[in-house]
Length: 148
Ligand SMILES: [Zn+2]
Ligand SMILES: [Zn+2]
Image 1 (cartoon, rainbow, N blue to C red):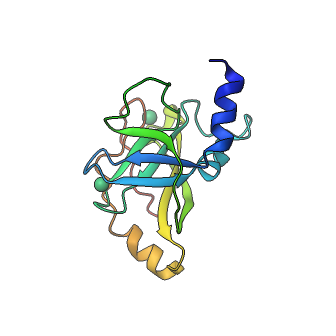
Image 2 (image 1 turned 135 degrees about the horizontal axis):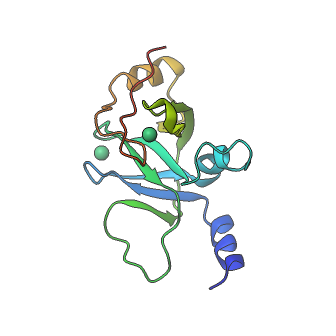
């Protein structure tokens, strides 16, 4: 299976399935939205295609990798897999998170999944409920909630 095949797979399947590392809750996120921060090689936030995502069920904020699983590989366990399904939820890029260690320079795009019908106020209120203690950069440094 060559690179062109996996490209095809990518364009035909507009959603990424993430099982929460904390509670196992499945979330379908829009693949095009997730890849946006990585689409420009000059601006790419990190070279591991890692994203931060807050589980809508348990509110745990964790790091996930976007690389699709290889064919034939088990689909069990945490991590994204490519899938398609109907959805009425919006994948939103909330912002870029910085690693606590200044020399690390790791940037993590933070995503949330919200219903189409929620307004900004409801989304901000939801952000306040997120659990940050399990969020780490790939070097296992702590990533803290921005104090803005
Ligand atoms: Zn969860
Ligand atoms: Zn770091």
